[in-house]
Image (tube, rainbow, N blue to C red; front, side, top):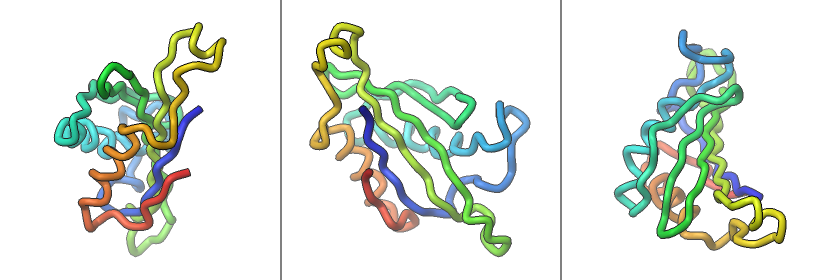
Length: 133
């Protein structure tokens, strides 16, 4: 189980695939780096982001819980503002195989890491339409 936090902005690259992208659609590296730099401000230490074939991911920790945080973005395809679009931050709780098997330690809607990410995003006036799915 995971929760997604979505928002809109033009602050990050959504228009120029980088030479190091696995796929041309692997946008979100600059947002992932930004999040990793900001999360310690709200008590969430994080590891460096790494690339997946769909976007970017990094590990984070809050208290005794570990999480995977995925990041990706999709442009609005507006030639006047090519970097404007929607970004998705996907939060998944790290669980042992036993916890998964027995349905324990699931990510809950009120989990503090979700609020921490939302707090960071809501502080920045360049991010709009913040919501959770």
